[in-house]
Image (tube, rainbow, N blue to C red; front, side, top):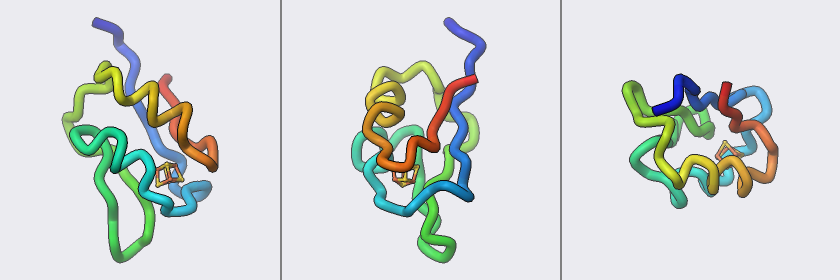
Length: 64
Ligand code: SF4
């Protein structure tokens, strides 16, 4: 298991919800802010995280 954590730069997020659709176990959507967020305690190693990183049109999801 890696030590990497997935993060979203919310300043860059355009609220397209692609990540939420691709990986709902890890990404939630804040309707008020119109931004996605990483669910507390979510498993950053889920395969769908990498898919979401690749699919984010704003390029604002990263693992570090
Ligand atoms: S895919 Fe990227 S731009 Fe779209 S909601 Fe998720 S973090 Fe925001």
